[in-house]
Image (cartoon, rainbow, N blue to C red; front, side, top):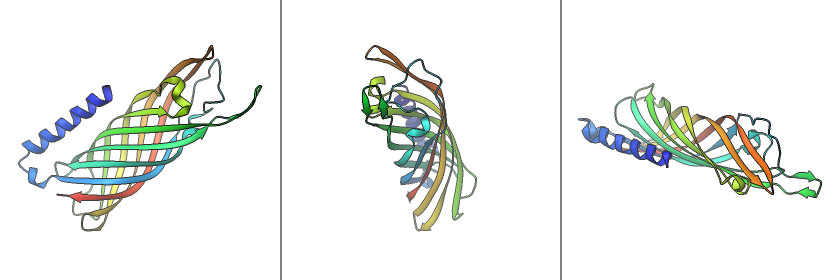
Length: 213
């Protein structure tokens, strides 16, 4: 609910700025699709019990990430971005007293809302920006069913660039970091399970975007 409220507030703010600005006719919209690498760099705190269904370290959740993004430039150097991505992996598994245990599927889905500050002007072939905002990260898939597929709110920092190819078409590159505290706990077959610890999730992405103005 919190993430939805924040996203809704951001959309309202974007629309308000766009309507109120005398230069509203120059507002630029950029739509894009991305592919990249999701790489968690955090760690889990020691737990009282462990499960072969869960990852030993956050890095095991890394994988190819697919997503989309929407950028709205409302001033020469000021813009907003909404972006989402999803990455899947298989974690856990191995030998147990009861025999060999199969790995389980995990899916990490992210959504971010950021304010952008462009370092170069619109005429530059390579437009470069920095971003900051908030995001939501869901740990899902079979792996996290026992925890109810928790959602965490994160602080977000990013850097990106759109390199003009032709007309409104550009090649995008960027990196996004999502910083948050994971605190998931559940009881499975009478055993208390937990995943806790500070997380720094990195998303390296490339893709294509198209500018509309």
